[in-house]
Amino acid sequence: MLTEGGKLGAFCLTEPDAGSDASKGTTVAKPEGDHYVLNGAKIFITNGYAAEVFVVFAMTDPSKGTKGISAFIVENTFPGFSVGKHEEKMGLHGSPTAEIVFTDCIVPRENLLGQEGKGFKIAMQTLDGGRIGIAAQALGLAEGAMEEAVNYTKGRVQFGRSIAKFQNTQFLFADMAVSIEAGRLLTYQAAMRKTKGQSFTKEAAIAKLFTSEAAMHITTKSVQMFGGYGYTKDFPVERMMRDAKITEIYEGTSEIQRVVISNHIL
Image (tube, rainbow, N blue to C red; front, side):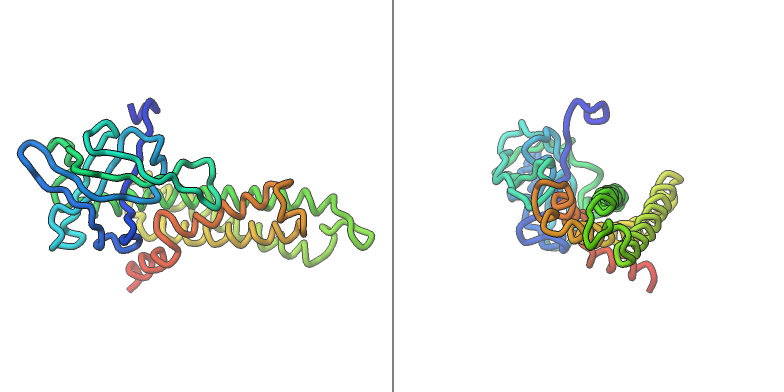
C-alpha cells in the first residue's frame, strides 16, 4: 500500500534530547515473548499525524550506543501508539509535523526491520537518499524565488527606470544563476550515483549543503529586492524564505553535512 500511494509513511528518529546525536536516544524496545514493548517519544516527525505506517528507531541495547539501535515497522493501530503535539512551524505549513509517543507499545517481533543493532545503519542510508530530495527541494525554492524577483524587478520603477536595470540587481541575479546551476549539477550527480548503485553519501551531503545554503541566501536576497512588499504576504517570496530555512536543518543540519564531507576527505 505504501508503494502504491494508498498509505502514508513516516520516519521516526529524532528525539527531544537526540537530534544530530542519535546515540543519545532514550526510546527503548524490550523483547517480551512474541513481541517488543516500545516506550519513548519522537519529535518533529514529518507526516506525524497523517501517516499510518512508521519506521521507528529504538534502543534494544542502550549500552552499545549507535550499535544498540534497532529499527521497527510500527502501525498507528498498535496498542500504546499515540500522536502527541502538532507542531506549529515557521514554514513548511503544507507538511504535517508532530510528536509520536509510545507507551508500552506492542510491536510484533516480525516487525523488526533487519537485525537487532543494525538500525543506525538503516537510518543513515535512508538519510543519504533523503538528502538528495532535500537538495532538489532547496533548488526549487531558489529557482522560484529568483523567478519571482526577476519578474518583480522588471516592473518596479524607481529613479526613472526599472530596478532590474541597475547593475547591483543584475549582479545579484548573476550570482543567483551561478548558484542554482551549480546546485542542480551537484544534485544530479548525487542522484545519478544513487541510481547506478554507486556510493553517494559524500555527494548527497555536498548537494544538500550547497543547495540549502544557496536557497536561504537567494530567498533572503529576493525578499530584499521586493523591499517592504517582500515582508508582506502579498507576494510568495516571504513564504519561500521561511520554507528554505528548514532545508538547512532537517535530514541533517549543515554542520552535520560538513562533518560527513570531511570524514570522507580525511
